[in-house]
Length: 440
Image 1 (cartoon, helix red, strand yellow):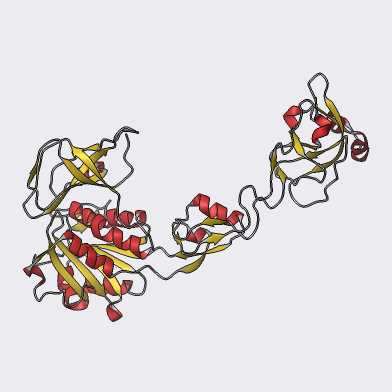
Image 2: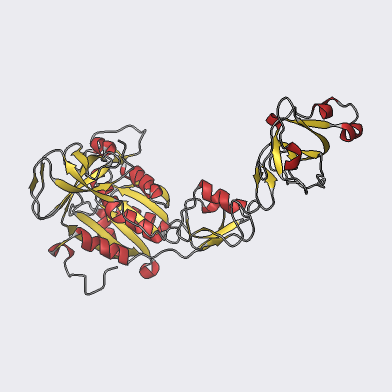
């Protein structure tokens, strides 16, 4: 929450900048306390510790091919016409078992991943041999071991087709640094070095709800004056994409008692609550009515378009749960999420970088913007060709209306027009917030 000195008797009496509001939001959230989780439960979380390997990986020298473990001197000069003929003294499969010693003139059949036997210096892949036909043709296995031979058609160099102990990871190596995001490959690495659990910053639990008696769940008939509810779906998906464990509560009608009951159900279950709708000055803006009495929540007007009305604060016992109240128009809600909620989620998750990447791009169209407002327009960004120092280009997508969800779905960035700018010509260099990885 902002300090008492930062609050004003009438929140509507001043206009806040985007930066001021964001600073208040980030000052009020903290990374969640680290927890120890099983590997798969930790997927998507950030490591809260450096991971140091306690042993070598691989833990022993092993074969990278199916073939024959040999001494290199025994294959010197081997060719298709004049192969080296070696006595096969055993089979070595992956897993525990007694290993035969390889002496001069001998070989052992070996499987991929099996430990290298003592005396062996390299592995001849089975494709370099006759496949040990003597062993394959023998009827009696004991007799076969005494008489089996293999022909090797190529010289085998020392170390050929051997995975050396510690060649992947050496004991004492820091294999992952604190702050790393645990995706599939990193979870696989942790398992490979023997970690069953890991200490992580947990993913914030986020509840998302929309308000409005006109809202109808998707798939149900839409009557006069009603619309299909979309905000809670978009914002829940956005929260998950930001790294939260988010669940959608859905639409709550314009009923203060019902809204209060829904909010109270979430206390103790979540780390953050996000609402959309009901934060303006309308007669039925119940979010503002309820929260001004129910928690320590400020409602503000920001110098931005879209998304001027915003609410932020804490609710519940001890005012412990952060709540961000976003406007109800779909575009306003989504842009507000990107600017304020996403950084809060990232900060709570322990991320070092909480903001979307921002670049400069040449705008291909002229733009108009209201004086004193920072405008965020939906755009389509194209990066420059590789190796060229020039900026990419961006074009606006759709009009400025805060209800236009069609163009929003086609945009991959937000074009930022500063408060001091009311018009730009084609070719102007503008800041662009990247919402996804751009394609060329």
